Image (cartoon, chains in turn red, purple):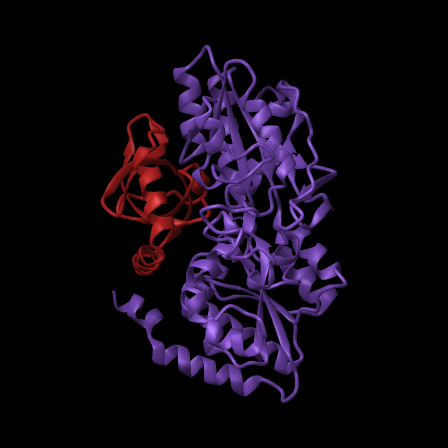
Length: 90
Length: 378
């Protein structure tokens, strides 16, 4: 729950500008990007995701670093990814 | 992946450690608190204490939201879950937290409808799909997760949903830090500021720590070298007799935080007069409740919440661990009666709790600890 996980924005959902499909370690899920409305991300941008919401934009290097860190954490990240894979907010 | 390799570079860590050691005044002891449970996890996993001179002690703070939930709130949530037609929804981290009559997992096994969700938006979807049920979201967390709960309530309001509500247990980090600064048990020299919470609240709220208490704060990232770099920045300030707030994690944390998130919280929630924290007791203005305008989504307004107060189990010393007064292994039940599989206290439940982190990775530092603390596990 406290883990910020990096995802790459793939596309926005038609008619729902607050929702975007992202790729997180190969898992593609829809998240809410409404908290970034001051500076909305574009497809190809990386975001840090907390419980289904993008909380900040990050660059690709930071995303790679964060991902390597999370993969090193082990079980907690596996659980978070499994939970994300079950998530269907759209 | 070059960037990652840089962070993992043991030589860099040793070089930083040498610079940190050089800044230690002979005979002076330094106590630095890392507020965030994510930092605690990194420190134990990578054995960072082994890189530091003996003069520096890292004190683990209260920044694990699962760990600070008092048992009474778990019992209250359990009572809500038992109301007719209720579907209780919760983050996975919360499922194993023990109440007086077991955890959410235990209640689920007994037939109570409790479902694990990744996001409050998943709860919202469950509500849409089950119009004849009343869906309650067990909201926990610091300012990192509060915006998500706020945005979900705003969405529920926009959709006109009438069967979704929030059992709000959101807590705020600044009053907890204040309580620790005012605690006579503990003298701290500086703070490693939380990373993700600061993404939302920014760095300004920490300024009182430097200004009024004369202690430096460095907001830090989660990589091992981030934390060592932050300790170095704290030691630079301490050796120069300065106290300011610095942002080591500026690649993610904006100085002013996320204003959209802060607005969403402010629109839907307000501070409670007081809230009970496990181990720390009642702290004024330290938690959020749903605003009157959004009472239609407030489980505490919609249901009769018992308001249970339960003393922590006698054997459990989570309170002292959360305040940094005791190290995890100094607790009487650590690793014997209390383990991640059968936790007595919340610090052993969450992977970010100091006890679970130490239990899982403790072997990295035990040699040093055994030498430093008679009776430590070896």
